[in-house]
Image (cartoon, rainbow, N blue to C red; front, side, top):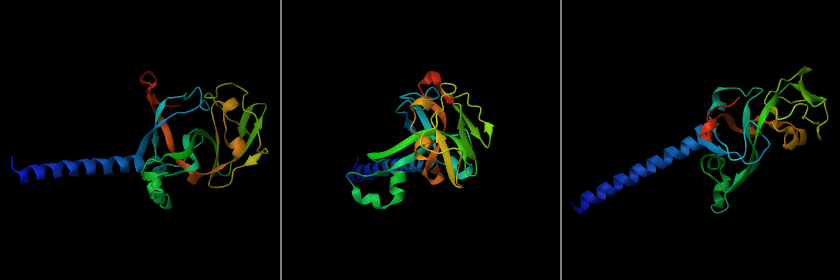
Length: 198
């Protein structure tokens, strides 16, 4: 094989690798990415070290509804090494970063709804919410938010399924829909729990 042929083959391999990396980055940043559950706030629906798929593209085509499991950004991500990239929002969406804090919670009320917590149960617009996914009955305790609480338009009220061990909207109030990174519908690990979440 001539040097020219070898160089051409190397360049073709480099081109294929670069294209594969770009496609992978775009898929992760715009369509979906795997997420590892860290913590107990969504027990028993999701437990520590479960792997789920975060769908980002779903937000472009569907409204968020009560009962949806979402990942929300609490602390924006930041690059620790290539700090100049922090000046561009699109880089934070496309590239993995070393810092940032996200929560995974369940939406229980949307903009315009009035939420109340009475006797350990959640009421939305005076109708008791049926929550078979909650770890323990009568476990939803009111915290720092004053009830009844009306969610402003464009915001969501989110709670963990493990109400006794969850930092959620009862403490930090409703959250802006823009803080939602995506929805979670499927668990991919462990394999014996693979499938659609309820």
